Length: 402
Ligand SMILES: C[C@H](O)[C@H](O)[C@@H](O)[C@@H](O)C(=O)O
Ligand SMILES: [Mg+2]
Image (cartoon, rainbow, N blue to C red):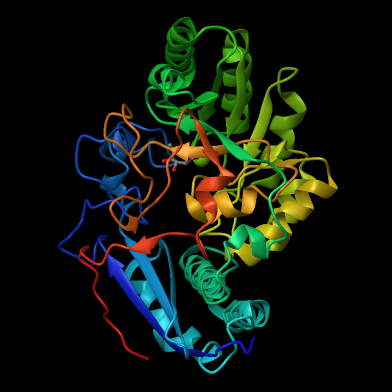
């Protein structure tokens, strides 16, 4: 089979601060309408400022919006992917990174990834919107390659090591998640160091109530979204330990490695420390891994794409750590079903009340699979590429043309 070459790349955005079509959801799943659980008094590094305590959108969690990248091959095949990078990502994709794709063969994915990474060192800082954009292009290339050779991405990675993926659910209603068949529920913390011990007491009451609703064996976890300091995190961990909390997630900003190491040393026996969704490069993941935390949680749309995720999984595997990607739908499903150190994965509840199953990137992906009874079977992932199509009825805008 003579593989085709890449003839075009097109970048679109939806939502975010640059568009009148905000509150759509999509790749930037924090860009939701009002009254959504995901924007309800969730603890963040900004919570110490009263005007930004109630809503993460008030400080701009959704300013970027969704990036959609399409890549077209000389045989007419089109691959695409989505991430969080909005209009800025469109500029980077069209005016900078397009030069590394045009004319290359559709299987030149690793070469293109290396060139995109090295060509942006001077302004990427190893993470953030630049790496999100590289990730989106990398995922679109894997989708294109799969669609050209008519194989699902997980097959291109060497095949599945299990017949299904089981999920925990992130949201405000772990009691409902249990009824839906998930193996656990991760809730956001609502309080932080600025609330003092009263904040810890309030979290204890929350988790005590949920433990009473879900019984003794359903997993309960806290997602702390970078909002804590070591002292608060240690006190919280020990205060909630009697209720069987499985892990504290992302207590600190990504690069506070010493804090993660200190927290890990002081955790109650059996409670895990996890982080990684806002970590953007391989060196940073190696450093995070060396803190001794239990689970690395890269987001495949924010860590350098599938090409990087596979390498991050190997770092974790080499140290006996788990890699459980931050919820990223099909873009992580096709990877994790091939990882031996990913026994479960995350499903992010994007319905406003966390009370019904809604595809994570709704409304952007057509045929986006969702867990049934908390699981997705390998049989759901057999379509070529990532097995989804772009919903072209969404208000996508293309601000730049390379
Ligand atoms: C629920 C958390 O605050 C974030 O919104 C979520 O995106 C992420 O941290 C997660 O682990 O799902
Ligand atoms: Mg998280």
